[in-house]
Image (cartoon, rainbow, N blue to C red; front, top):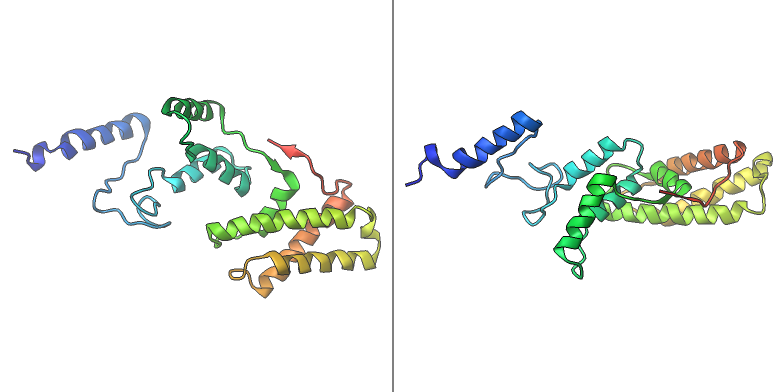
Length: 212
């Protein structure tokens, strides 16, 4: 007969959780039949089908890489949790071990990520975040084409105004609505313009090289 005093929870799980806490500093959560779901839930899971604690994983990666932009964080998480059904469990384990031991390789365009960080808002959903990435990428490409024939655009009031209007018009068309409002768009356009201005004045105009 199983009683509270000799149950598996008490003899095995609780004992092992205490060992992990005492020896390794791990935290444990008893969530059986008590877990709440959602971003602010017990474990941050959407449902029991999620086996990876994405909230904790993102926090851990960000803690180890404090300067890593959001877009690169997304790349790292996607590589860590993705599964290819055409590959064996051994191949997956070997790849995962390599990531844990050597790090997860990510790549990005410096300016593309800089624009994404300028536009990023914590309150946006995952789907809107993807739209924001595309908006930043599209804006960057359009700005490069616009500025290519006028390297000294900063020296003319007319071309300065042209660039300001161009950025604002582009964001009007590409930012997801909602959640972005008219005020948000004007504020973000100002941020982007200031970034482009500083890059141009500093002699480092928008570039295309990849970083990893």
